[in-house]
Image 1 (tube, rainbow, N blue to C red):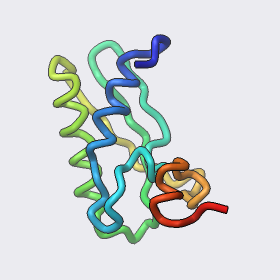
Image 2 (tube, rainbow, N blue to C red):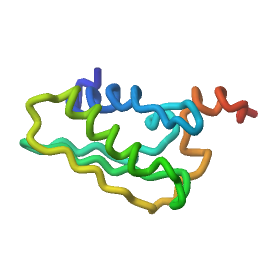
Image 3 (cartoon, rainbow, N blue to C red):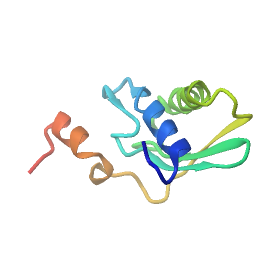
Image 4 (tube, rainbow, N blue to C red):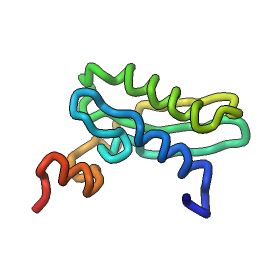
Length: 105
């Protein structure tokens, strides 16, 4: 666990359980999570989609909220901000995801 920010690390680990059903990979390794900001009684999560037309956007955002609430049941509020800057690209994926999709050099 991240000694500098254990709450952020706990949320990140919980979000590894949120799988994009279209591609079968979690939102963290896909590079869709841009930021996790724990505050006193809430968590703000900045995330993106692979495309603005992603049909799973609402589903994924709700699953991110649910996974965060499960990891931190005492938190009062979970906010998920959908952002488009910077635009998502395959370079944002983890090495694990790139290998999964066969996108390694």
